[in-house]
Image (cartoon, rainbow, N blue to C red; front, side, top):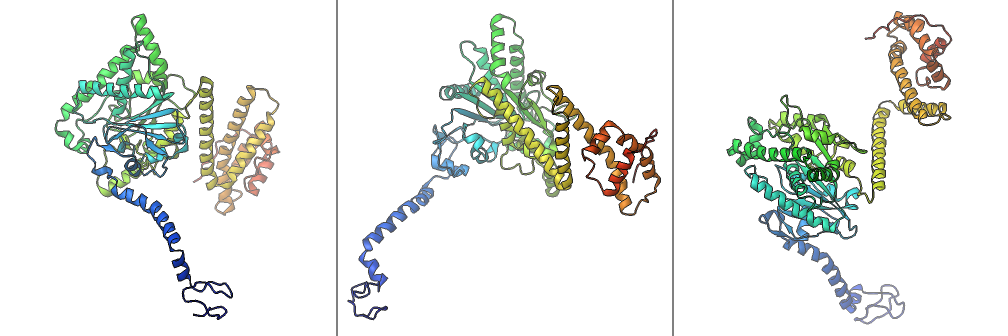
Length: 539
């Protein structure tokens, strides 16, 4: 055999030329070091194939029976979590309890999610991956998805037993976490309230739970409407065989909670007063309620409007530094128009759309940004406070961030329509701030707000003349049209000769209009106004 490079004779078993030292046969080279190559391939295969084999032999969550023990691998795969830092802090029993903790973040606070009528401990919330992957939450909180039987046939004793079970879970969490945030949907709010009321009855033998926030989405506070609604009964399916019994069971639970809450907040003796004060401090002052227009299942008024019980409304009026305690999301802001269009096209209507979609993470593409579940939740719970001062500062910061985000969204919408508007807003702000820079607080803030508001009113007023100016520039209106001349004789001089008009002209806040209109404004500033007549309406 000859070397391909130098043509020297080489041994048939050699892979390298003895003259030029070049490799002549990679096949013989690999064979010479075959054991090293086999070792590398084996290591690569071990690390890559192991994961696939584990997936093949892992039990499919959907095939497991109710109450079965679910492995961590199956749980993470089922939730779609790619972050391997999550693990089950306690055994995960299907349909009962899922307690997720992160190995890296090791949060000191926990969020307990309690589902309602429809869905189960996880499916009620849509895709929890949205919440678990959000750094605002996963770096500050662990998560407990609490499950219970949702059938309407459960009577009052079963309801009390479920509340006692939840209380035991919360007591256990009190031992491991600095604070607990309870998030409920629909009937879950009733279960949670019964749990907290029972705890209050045992005060001071049992101290209140370490509650950070209680956020209730579409809870039962006044009534539940099952009878006379065919669409709702279709949704319930097999459970709808005895609607009257379901309505009676649910109403009895609601009435018991309402009566106990009312009695607790109307103490008759010193011990009852102490219980009421503890409940107000540790529970009532932490409650936030989020309702939705178009919800025909719970808290429905005589005309289809959303209502709440008098006691809950009283609690919602407690002072707060952050988000309002009671809000009702507009139907159009939670994808109502899109849902109506889909229902009209398909002929199939979802009667519980507004009731359930408010907590369906991953299914809120048609929502306005601030009405997404995770945004509503973070606005109300923020990051866990470590002390009172930190709590106040946190609320201030989250409120400021929400204001800034809202302004940004509004400005972006308007500036996309008319880029010059963005420049006008900046110039107005700069001019107003310069005018009152030497005025001491708190007068300065009020004067800045008043002048800014008056400036915007002037722009709204001048928008009428701007429309006529546009028609004039396109030849639709004559420069000597009576409407234009009427404005030049009276309205423009009166405006531009005012203190506000001259200030805006001096600060170049009229430079955003066309050249002919700016000329008219400057001429009006040097004219003497007459008694104004109402401006003519343009068509």
